[in-house]
Length: 291
Length: 290
Image: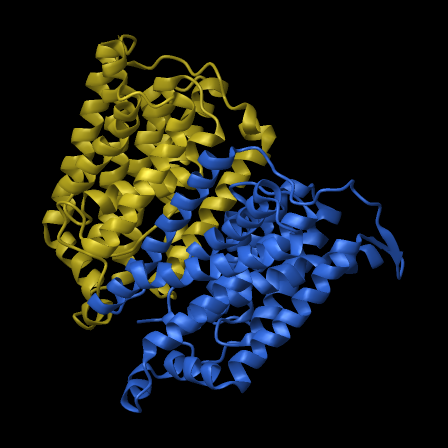
């Protein structure tokens, strides 16, 4: 039982960070940004290159990798989504474009670094420590701490700073925001920077704990989509709730069924929610679901 | 020469798939990322019936089409409640659950081992054995699928579909039962995709889950969008183009190991470029922009 709780907390905290970035971007630009998974993969691989190939110290390479990827996310919005947005406001075309970005990045990473798994950590695998009756590794504890801090930081950014307030204004009432003189592009660039950085950090943390594969972004992205839809896309707390629920169900399903059914069960949960409560657990009636 | 004929058969399979998806994506405006699941259902149903129970090809084909039609009506159900982009997410989930079933329900599908030894089809005493026979059969299927799609989307039925695409509430206000139209077009589209799957399974003689993955669904979507959604000819040409692309890459000397990844990089890029510059694709009229 203690091990179940520990595993759930670890998985949920990483998932929450990925889903938070995805949800923030979704709230402001109103489309599913599949390229979020690409940024997650890029964060891990950028750190790998800076640390192993260039030889920078780990912390420095992780930080520069995250900054780099945040820049990539910002540039991606300007180069791809902004022209689409200026032509027409719809949710389809940017979503398809972002799907294209994810396909390109996943395969480009496979071409550049091969399909085999890579490890970010250097030293030997350390044995876990005993903590409240569960076995966890040091890096997992660090991961959970970092994720909780980041979640708080991002919530503070969105709720208590001027930039966050502007972003929320653009998210809720884009036309009204424009009327009072808010430049929506600035707010959009801001959430793309923050969201992409969150994706990259999650990628690095997962890379530390387990392995890197070119397809890692797909898995993270799909789980984040489920967490955001289940929790409720309109609410920051909903994202955390969704992440905890998805992680708990994944870990609980292993106890009953063989591990390969994990994904099918999570996607079954997604369909169940889409059919019965598409606005998510915490989503209010105000979430616009039908055109 | 033999290889060229093989490529023609494969092209016909993808033309059939792309045309059937175009009825949904291009004409009705419902993007579905689980077309490979319908393709798989056709392939697995008909080949399992043929291998385990000795069904004749035409009967196995029909059974595959029927099961896919029923499954696709089930897939269409969430579209009653969901806005378009949420529905795309639902089809992602359907595709991934289906892939998981193919991989893990080993009693039925043998999982990653796949189903070998699919018998050569025999239709009314005609054994489809040589490459030439296969080209004929595949071209016949693609032509029938194209004509069916053309007839269906050309008439009053197609007008209602395009009305749903442009403004569903308005179509409903005119007294059209839009949900029934959506279920019907899903059933037809799924059945045609299943026919392609059934033919593909019997042609290759061995199927496994990798031919029906999420990546395959995205490939079919790319064919429709790059070719031009809503024009039927565009997706057909898109299918031929994306099948020919890796072969062209090989001709100019790319190693085969890299070709698979490189092809995906290229069609991903084409997808991004199409969305930024020309969302209606090469020959299409509809750009998913309402």
